[in-house]
Every structure is written in structure tokens, then in C-alpha cells.
Amino acid sequence: MSVLLVEDDPSIAIVITAALEQEGFTVTHCETLERRDQLLGEREFSALVTDVMLPDGDGIESLAVIGQEHPAMPVVIVSAQNTLDTAVRASDTGAFEYFPKPFDIDELVRTVRQAVGKRGLDNETPVEDQFGDGMPLVGRSQAMQAVFRMISRVLRNDLTVLILGESGTGKELVAEAIHELGDRRTGPFVAVNTAAIPAELIESELFGHEKGAFTGAVSRHIGKFEQAAGGTLFLDEIGDMPMQAQTRLLRALQSGTIRRVGGREEVRLDARIIAATNKDLKPQIAAGLFREDLFYRLNVVPITMPPLRERPEDIEALTRHFLNLAAREGLPRRTLGEDAAELLSRQPWRGNVRELRNFVYRLALLARDNQIDAAAVNDLFEAEPGDNTSHPDREIDLDSAVRSWLDANRPEPGNIHAQAVAAVERPLFAAILAQTGGNQIRAASLLGINRNTLRKRLNDLELDPDAFAGRH
Image 1 (cartoon, rainbow, N blue to C red):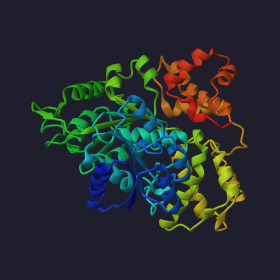
Image 2 (cartoon, helix red, strand yellow):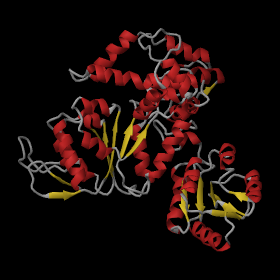
Image 3 (cartoon, rainbow, N blue to C red):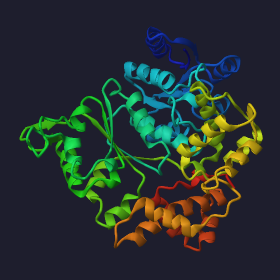
Image 4 (cartoon, rainbow, N blue to C red):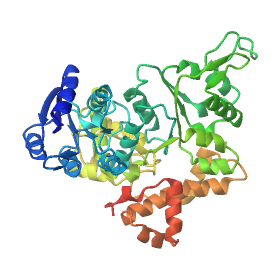
């Protein structure tokens, strides 16, 4: 693992070099931007550690170009210019981390190790495998880069994270990445789907129970909170948690302690809390189905997973990853033709990355030739007449879509209209932004609403117009 260090202060360079080499890194040191660019042109590095103020220029200004030329190389910035402007500029480059001088050398080394080893961005690890198998957190799209930046910002703290996004976008993978890359990685990662537990059992599952607490409680049961001690507790589908359990969860988060069902002992919590939901919680709050105070307690650091249709530029890399993964699992090894990649990138993929993964596995199994072309993709679409979610030429039946949404979500009576509008509004606004390349004036005109109204709704829906730039 090789690191390029760009630092014109000899004493700081010596300290950083010695600390990195002690951890097994090979360090190449230079003092100028000119020499940096020369070295980057000669060979690849696992990471770049750079100062800002250098003898021949600003070390941040050219990082955007370096990011385009070396997209797999993480950048760590150190600077004595400890201003908000410098921190913001460093963040805007997509740098893995920014350290103001003076900094903790152990923390710097740990960050470089995480950037290279945990994110899988060294020369030996393809980008498709950044976060392992399954539905990888992979993407060069602006939307996914924003997710990566948010993940990097919560690794060295225990702030509560709320992951938002549609089903199949990889919310649990984000939770796993935060755990595996963070300081709690040596502890357990405990995941619980709150929607899959019967309402009468959820408190026992989360908080545990004492012997005799209720009929059938023949022994003490340790709940998920205690099981996650020293690690991370991931509460999936938090929007479906019963109100009584929400109240107990809020009390636990506020006090930092829990009490087992039927018990008197207060047990102190020692777990990072990450929650996730595929629902818009604001209509849930308005309908009285989700506690507003719990929402604000969980929503300390929100991370929104973009649906796959909003990042079509990532579909080809995902497809190639899944083809490789399928081959490792015993399916025929296939390659992806350019026409097939282009066709797959045009699909809406309403089931998101999960739907794409399953489709690619079927392609690997059923394709006649080793190279998958557009004809093979279309053949598989046509072989699935009951699935109208992905084929670009099929007419979309909005009536059926509404009925399917009602069946799948079972919204509470008395608030169906508000929940339906909320479910439609976000994908509608996202589609218009994609069509206009993020131009808010054109988007407001197409929607027939005031631009200020559009801006407010985009903020409420957590949609960033800049993420759609250049798509139309």
C-alpha cells in the first residue's frame, strides 16, 4: 500500500512518514504541486495525503482534476488554514477526510488505513467490490458520492443516523459500512426488522424480558439493545414500529438506559443506534402514526439513499459486479455488451438495486451466449409477462400502480390521501429534475408551481437539484 504525501514542512513530513511506515505503508514524499503531478503521472498510489498551502499553489484547487484522473484514490487533506472556508472547500472536493493542524497523528494514520483498507480503493481492489458482496455501495454518480461523504463524516463519532430510501436501495449496507469502518467495528452488529416482529413481542425483542414477565417467559431473555453492547444496533423499517414501542424507544434514547420487560434493573446502553425506513415519516407524524419527538431524536444525521433510477450512470458497474458475483457462486461466467449496458441503464428499476441484482442473476443463468447483448436482455424481459416494472416499452398502468401501492403499504384509514400524495410527490419531482437537468426554473414551469414553492418542497423531500445536473 503506497501513499503520496505532499507536505512542504519537513518536520511534519517526517512525523507523518514515520507513522505511516510504522503501519506498513510505503510513503513517497514531495513538496510541490508540480512534483505531485509528475509522480501521479508515473505510477498509481493507494492514497494521497496533501497540505493546502504549498510553495507553488493551492493544494485543493486541482483536486477535482485529480479526482477525475484517479477516481479510485482517496484523498486526505491536512492544513494550517483552519477556517470554515478551508473545511468547506475540502469537503466539496470529495476528500475522504480533512484534518486541521495540529492534528492527532494516530487519528490521521487510522483514517488513511480506513480510506485504503476499508473502502477498498487501493489498486488491487476493483471499485465494484468496495463494500463486499450483495448489493454493493458502488457509484460514481453525484448522489452516491454524497452518501459516501456522509458515511465518512459519522465514522469517528456515535451520532444517531437515520437512513432514508426506497426498498432495495441498500439501507442496511450503509448501516453495515458505518459499523465496519467505524470505531465500533470490533463489537457486534445487530440488525432487527421492526416490521417483521409482532406488535405484542417487539418490546421483549428490543429490551428483553425477565423470567415470568408474561405467559411463556420461562427464562430471562436478553434483548437486541443488550446484544449490541459495544457495537451497533440497526433498527430497520422504523416507520412501522408500534406506538407503544416508540414510546419506550424514545425513553431509552433519552435516558441512555433500558429496563427489561417485567424487570426493575436499569441497564445502561452501550450501542450506536442506526435506524432506517422506506417511508416518509412526516405524513406518518401528521397522521399520528409516528412520534414527532422520536423522529427528531433519530434524525440527528440523515442519509438518503437515492433510488437506482436517479443514478443510471451506476447501473453498468453494478451489473458487472453482479455478473462476477454470480460466476463466483457457480453460475456461468458472462460478460456485458455495450448495447446491453445501455439498455439496462434506461430501465426505471422500481425495485432498485435488489431488482437489478435478481435480474442479472437470471441473465447469467438463462443467456445463450457468454456475452450478454441487448437481445438477451429483451428476451428476458419478454419472458416475464407478469412483471411490468422494468421494460421500457411497456405501457405503465397508473391505476394498477395505485392499487399495488395500497396493497403493499396498507396506509392507515383517515390519512390515505396525504400518504398517497407524499408517495407520489418525491418520485414526480425527481423525474422532473432529471428531465430538466436540475434546472429549478424549468422544473417549476413544467410542474406549474412557483419556484419558491418548488424550492421548499425539494428541501422538505431532501432532493438536491445539483444531483441531477447534466442528465437531460
